[in-house]
Image 1 (cartoon, one colour):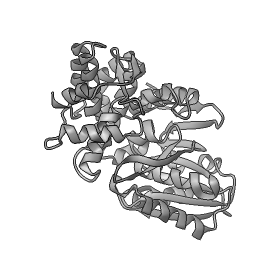
Image 2 (cartoon, one colour; image 1 turned 90 degrees about the vertical axis):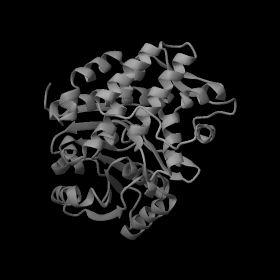
Image 3 (cartoon, rainbow, N blue to C red; image 1 turned 135 degrees about the horizontal axis):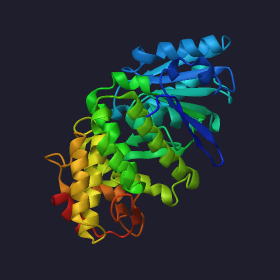
Image 4 (tube, one colour; image 1 turned 45 degrees about the vertical axis):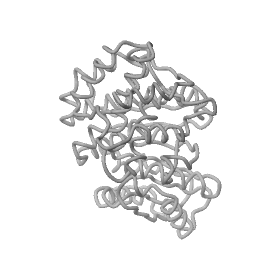
Length: 364
């Protein structure tokens, strides 16, 4: 596996490039090449800011000495992806005097990327955002595709906008400071791409499990690039989730319900909830006669190998989880809609799934 930088181009009406490689947060020329104006706001959280914000600001300032740069720091965690913190980013843009050619640099994980991207989508009806993901989960999922949002008490990501980034710059060096639990959570989303579209990728992941968990740079870069290539192709064909893009939600309807019922603050994180959700989706597929239970058990074995959870956390009521799913934005007027599979690499949308089948999967 090569350690040279990877690039993935996303086409469509607002094309952009994904860069994957080492030490990219220090590449002032690359960072500055995304700028159209003279204002930049770096949005990060209290954990990532002391690790990388100085480096990003120094690289930008060296490349563009006339640039006016400000920072906005939010607390750490999904519980802070709120309308109040969205408003604080808007206030920071106002204080900077950000013009329509300004740029927001979203430096951090998915919470930062979603929040900063939504603020960029709304300031002056839309300014540039450059995603600088520092977690594996953000590199392979939330930074790509232009989905931005905040949570409200009723559910996750219910308030947001589609706003494609100007660029995605994924510096794999930042993964060295990622706690092992967060690395595994990101690998859940990597596994998802194999589950929905590329069964061979599942075999590759199983073969490289030890290297990925050990943080091997070449293995991680390859996994990120392959994941981004799959997501880029899907989002290019379906930018607003009217069809095929829904496949990316494999495991998410269950997973989001688990997260919402936990209140986002404690329990499973997003990647862990998706891991449980994928297995529940595979079990539901088997119950509906779409795939074999053996396929579900193979998925469980792979998730176990990566140290990911495969059971609903104790204390979560199946009826309450079902109620969360019925509010989920992926639900349609005709009833519950799930992304299920006919086996590895063969996901599809299934509408009008009976609640009794969902409850049976949750209670299994």
